[in-house]
Length: 161
Image (cartoon, rainbow, N blue to C red; front, side, top):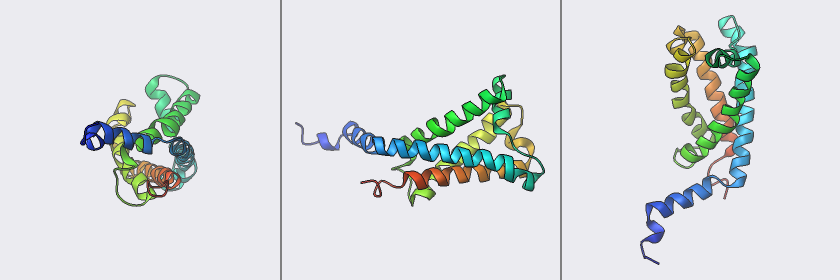
């Protein structure tokens, strides 16, 4: 075995992958993603009306973009929020971002929020940042709450050793 083998990029990357994507972390990430998605969805339904005068139905936005029913849009919303984002968080943000778990989750969700506002919303016919500061701020709050919940549930690498 080479003396440099333990320090090779491949070896370090494989070790980091195994540590980040342990069964325990995956389960916690999926639970955190589900709880975050639930909170995000409920905020759009029950809190947004108090802030902007109407609910924000993410399922309907996704359904319109995909040309399908609201129930399929809701399913897609929960698949992305419960599976895709949490696994991406474990692979990208969990061990690379600084701070406590909640802060790591919050910071991880900021580029996702920006991608949703700059790419996804125009694709859904809603315009960049919904063409509305109040609506985009409600969406930011939802993404922040999601990220905080995800990060709190998953914790930090030192918490999980």
